[in-house]
Length: 307
Image (tube, rainbow, N blue to C red; front, side, top):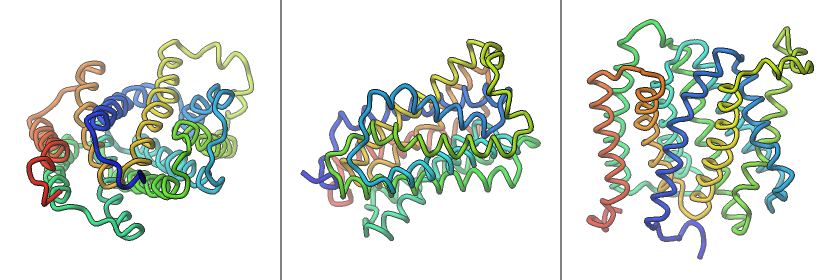
């Protein structure tokens, strides 16, 4: 069965929800580590952890090198450099988790242009419902004042566009090499991302040489080590590996909307771990996004002609 014709099953929904949870909690260690590292240092650490030690156990996937390179540059270096710099120059973690989900609109547009994959009526309804929720989240973040800047918003939208580009690459890979290993694909595509981040750190950081001194690693706290491991292994290797597996079996338009749950899990992670406050606009936005996910997951069974 070809990847694009695979039937969506309950197992796929559960995998997508697991990915959403892992990505939602992703913003907590990002916020913690950016207190000690520059955005490009964080990118280096994240993708080095994604590559090492997994590269010693994972064979190179049977895909063209150019796709590994493009995925690493788009999803690795492009998406996360823009995201980390956005948070650094003027973006809250909550709004970042919201704006990242605009990738579903970039993905829908790209899928139509490249694969002629038209969004279904229900997908349009779901995306419209989610857009309302995203607007409530955005209003909440901007109305708090101070932390959010126009540059931060532009950079975060750029990160979302990079993510959608990586989704397109994954679909091309799935069509060319249906038997490739998604986990190996994520591990080895993380290598060019790590190299790009290291080059930028070496060029732009005045104290980049500190990473060549053993004492630097001795001074890293256990909380930072755990944050590094979560970002490199849980939210990159596990989450993106599972996400790529879904993209291997299904059209990007079917997979991408599940990422709308990331702001919800990110919000609860902020409440539970960081003690962040949630206002009424965020709760209203959560309700709309939750409704959009219910439409994606269950409405096709009830309204098959619109699915």
